[in-house]
Amino acid sequence: MIDERTVREMVRRVVLRTVRASADARLTGDTRLVTQKDIETLTPGSAMHIAPEAIVTPLARQLALERRVTVVRGEETPTAANSSSGDRAHTVALAADHGGFEMKEALASHLRDRGFSVIDCGTHGKEAVDYPDLALAAARLVAQGQAEAAIIVDGAGIGSCMAANKVPGIRAAMCYDEATAVNSREHNAANVLTLGAGLIGGALARRIVDTWLDTPHGAGRHARRVGKIMDIERRYLKG
Image 1 (cartoon, rainbow, N blue to C red):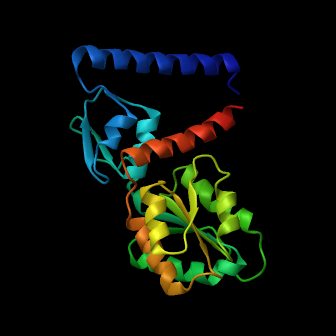
Image 2: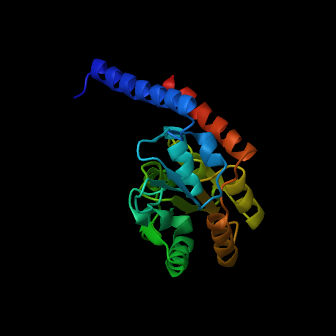
């Protein structure tokens, strides 16, 4: 087990390296430190070419994942910045309680028809289960980087949204039409969608899912405000 002194030394080295790189970038004019602001200027789904020795800050990496920006070092073959493997960019975690089981099954088929890989977190039948358990299972895959996004279905979509938002790094949104789907992605960079099977029908659910997945996260003021949302989370995690 790593002791506290070792952890502090590791953090000190990373910070020192980043500060030095930042100073070099300011002195030489080279793009050797990639920050969140650099990613914000790029079109979602685009590529960014950086020097082999460039350092990408953690916030920049997170924003690149969310905006599907591909980071290419030197002469490297482009790799998706939002994936440790190329498959993550097309992987959706799917979960539901007993009230959302049938809708989940239909959405799984729809997503596969669209070319997405689906991680089915359950439930796998109509027997009563507790929605927080399923919401946690799906949200955790997004937080751990194993899925690009998650879709969770329960009776109203509200409880699963609350549960998912307790997972650090998750921004879950309960959507009930295409307008809220667009807003939750463009304005709030939602990475988890929750649906209420008792509130919407299957056709509308598919339209919401398609709209949500196809809407990129907004840049500029939207990205800045999402950053403030995540700052609130980090503030309380530190406490």
